[in-house]
Image (cartoon, rainbow over all chains, first blue to last red; front, side):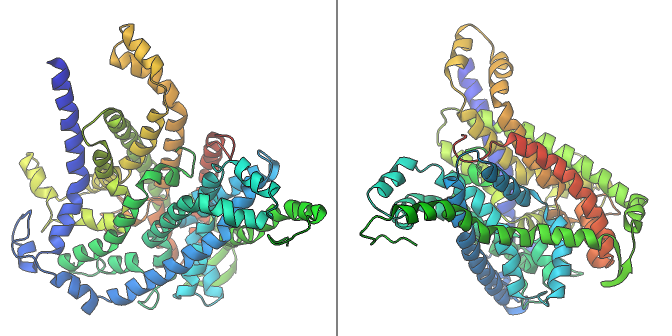
Length: 275
Length: 302
């Protein structure tokens, strides 16, 4: 009997945690589907007359078309660029003698870059990009994100690559494959799931970034979705409906991606320190 | 480059490729990383020794910016607020995360679903998190004030008062980042061998004793990694607070990063802002040094 009531308490605590975790999502989504009048009409947990007007307003009045296009373009090029730069480097690190000086130093540097808070970097970035006339351009954002994300790719990919048994690759080498073809035929197929997870984490990191995009851009020519969301808040009278809708647009694609890689979450967030 | 089609084995060339190969692959990535870390930081440190007005470089300033910053009461207040914020958030998140991980680390109906629900908050952009909580705290359409009313606290607007706004921002951080603590600690708990624990239970040890004598010591390395990572990230908190309060009311939620941002981009005193940032960098390097010692490095060492 005591055992059963303890189990009931555990489930009760878990349900409470779920409600706490999920309620803000519910509140934002339902607000985004309400008319202005209903939003101010008191607390309703379900929209009485659901509408998509708020979402239409984002694209008609608040430039979300360009914001979305900028985000997609910047994310696509930065993720591709950092995977191209980072994956070979990660492979090279796993091929260096284990615990060698170079391997150790390389990983420390990469880890340091990842740990630098964005506020440390945005002021110099701003000054540097201003020098080259790259402020408020998508190219400027792509260059910054590509560089920063390369460190993340190296860390995560070397943790995935290190799991591929050396024997398999060495067997291919003994069979007469060159290192390059062994990489192409053996290592990359085995690393594909890790590569996919790394790519998705990179998409999440870059799509979600706010501070860098906020400081480097100033008009819808280059502003991304998170910056677009924040432009809705600066106004004197906040339009709650469109703001909630903007939040939904900002969150939805990422939640889908995040659920795909949730198996690798711990590794992605701790850079392989914990699996 | 030796290709797959090479019919005759050419051992010397292959050895050369083997030795040169890995290092060469590191070069492009190293250049990219230096371009976004060493170069801007060096640039920033130089900038911290110069005077900027309205975004224009007005010449060498020596240590003026640093002296100025260290005597700036608003800056010192922001440091204090940040310290209070980081300690409070990390403490609550660690305790809650550990508690949740202990709850979930057992046979449950629908284990995976509990996990997904709990981790959802940390997947969305911090800006969106700010929007969500703005909708909750809003004094005209929000739900926080009525809920507080139900609990007997009347006439409070969460974002209107100084201490309530600070607590409101902390609650948001707890909501967003407890999942990270939960996930890391759950992963740690799952690597702990069960036999010693079962043996202790057989010997009649209470659940609390088992936890403190057996689970906690084995969890300690993972716990340290989690706390250091979260502390470094919390030190740089910007997005959610910018969206929620912009540092107000007054300076009650003005964290370090908000003040540095305002100094650089609102007051256009880039040099002075860089001086603040360099001081923070020193703090982060110390913490990162600790983290790197704790994080086991490299392949083959796991």
